[in-house]
Image 1 (cartoon, each protein chain N blue to C red):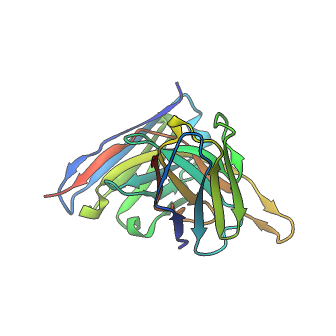
Image 2 (image 1 turned 90 degrees about the horizontal axis):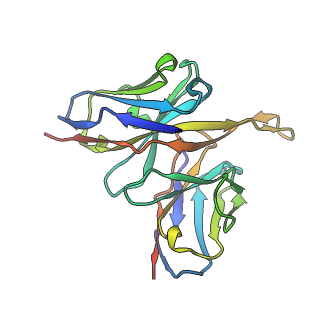
Length: 107
Length: 131
């Protein structure tokens, strides 16, 4: 099975900051990487798929890059509504494992 | 309205069984692969199982194999997860989600491997396994 590891686990930032979250896979997953946002008590929301394709309706401040085993999610200018937990997920092979999550909170 | 609604969660004793349901509306349910994922209290997400549109192909995480069974009834726009031999570590909120597939053929390697992502989620149903 493929293990996904995110860093950092917690990130404190301010409105307007540029932030980057890293996700590493235990083996190459090419570009089979998705990102989700989850707020407390809510279901996850898809942000990006296939590493860098932004889901319809997601603001353009969200972007993704990477390939193989290392990937990043970047939020170019944090907004209040972006404070949440972010998860990466590999879709290269089942089981479609998630990272442990990155909690983005207000500094 | 486009939505997935899970039901059937609750308190069950270790070793017991439970059947979760997920009802879809606003989508052509039979067009989609469907998945179950779960989230233990205060923990991250874990993909549990998925099922093909016609119900023939199914995949499971190792911890679910032999204990959980995913199924669907396209006439009822419904997805199910039959869980048995439940353990304390199965305690979680269980979500159903549509699994969207994008075909992808790598001409260099000859490898066909579709992209998958989960784009519509329900609000979840809680399962508590405790005596």
